[in-house]
Amino acid sequence: MPGGVNSPVRAFRSVGGAPLYIKSALGSKMVDADGNEFIDYVGSWGPMILGHADPRVIDAIKRTAENGTSFGANSELEIELAKFVKRLVPSIEMIRMVNSGTEATMSAMRLARAFTGRNKIIKFEGCYHGHGDSFLSKAGSGVATFGLPDSPGVTPTTAADTLNAVYNDLASVQKLVQQNHGEIAAVFIEPVAGNMGCVQARREFLQGLRDLCTAENILLIFDEVMCGFRVARGGAQELYGTDADLTTFGKIIGGGLPVGAYGGRGDIMEMIAPSGPVYQAGTLSGNPLAMTAGIETLRAIDEDTDFFSSLEEKGAHLERGLRDAALEAGVEHQINRVGSMFTVFFTRKEVTDFTSAKMSDTEKFAEYFRHMLQSGIYLPPSQFEACFISVAHTREDLDRTIEAASGAFTTVAKNK
Ligand SMILES: *Cc1c(COP(=O)(O)O)cnc(C)c1O
Image 1 (cartoon, rainbow, N blue to C red):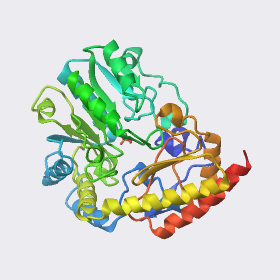
Image 2 (spheres, rainbow, N blue to C red):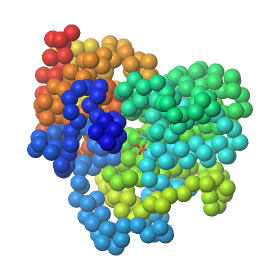
Image 3 (cartoon, rainbow, N blue to C red):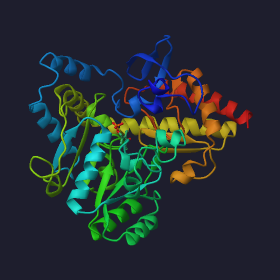
Image 4 (spheres, rainbow, N blue to C red):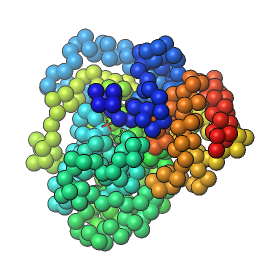
């Protein structure tokens, strides 16, 4: 396997050491092949908002599996999940299930181009929208972690149709729209960014984007693969009160199994085959196991009226503890947090976009990461990723994490 991994972000290249090989996971904890236990803040990069191996999800998967794992024909489970998403995210009038976030964003892009009859898209530096050719330009996540230039293998013609704007900077979008007037099909954005570390969009910025897109007949596409069902029951659209024309989902919607989805305005979605001419298909799309894991996860989120307030409380407690520890150690830091998503940056300046995220001292991050791992805390092995808290994280887990961070920050401060 290239780099010993099946996805680059799992390697420890930017922090040093050997990547973990996990044997089992339960609740907030994971156990590696050597028997070491870790409190997990990666959460499979977002899906495990209930914690690992939640019995409700696992039992439902077992029952479903006994009736067959894939039919290549429709099942009621697809309808159930579609209805669930529609109810939680009101801008979704129609939805199509796929197998990953990457598939969702690639399909939404093709659809946006077909609907508008335009070729170019605008995205934001530091946002990650999966590994589709068009999105691998100034991308976040692994592309940012490894400091890769735009990926080889993407043709210059493809790359030329992707324009990058600055996160939280509406003027940078307006300028691109003016310079390419009538040519922009869609603006893609992570409305809460998690792939340059956690960076929150300003409310006025998102509303400004909405107004600009409406005025220019550009589709506004919220990539909620990470923040959907994470930052609020209805995702970022609920949090900000701003609707998207199309939305992409992944991660939580699959409850730990491979699922993605894209949906939105009915007049746009009607263009997807077989109701319309835009082709998109999938052998395993909507398969019963993945639908079941998604349904059970959304059900657990939906049924618990305290779900998001409890996550917010855990997040706030951890943030407070980490901040106090960093202040006490005298480490320059910024903690960005939206509910149960957060990132500790090692910089004095506020982090609002990719440029300010890259000001973080990644050497210090690596040191912090290694110290935390030694103390039994598993963080994403990159500065440019978000940490995730699940409802399974206990107060004791959080306090142990703060204690470990206290030691880590002291080490970081000593070695400057
Ligand atoms: C993870 C992620 C993707 C890609 O999803 P995959 O399932 O890894 O293909 C796309 N967009 C965002 C915002 C993501 O966080």
